[in-house]
Image (cartoon, rainbow, N blue to C red; front, side):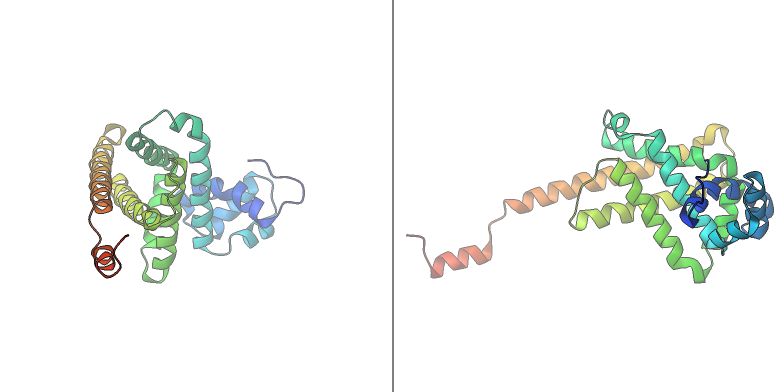
Length: 218
């Protein structure tokens, strides 16, 4: 990603996110990774350091880059031709493909995010990934469904990443099978929830019944 003249810190983070991750696989999420990424792009190390003051800032920027790259690979018109289950599967698998070149960096990032002091940040990043996926999948829910869908998908994504980091099977077959089972679970849950809510719409209202007893319709 080329930098514009006189870039902002946000533009620097976006441009260096992937190179920093590539170097973090060898150097760890630290200043050495940032310096190496800055050198590769001819950027002043001091300026790059201002954009990435902490390991969490580096990881955050990388995951934001993954969000953006996922959207580029799976534009809305392509996703629109798929069923909802296929969309979610494709989105998660695309993320895995984007993470694949730097799986060691992901392993190091997971270790950092697992630290108790970083738990809230880890949850926020998981939520952001799930929100990005549901939005690309076409979800427009604004009620409690908005939150339940993202909470469940964030959990599935986190569990899938844990399997992925240990998966040495050809083409990550074990991870894909695990993901398929978990997404099947999401779809069954959503179907059961829709059926339950549908039945609820036709249930007689006790309060309305009592109201009619007191104030009969004339």
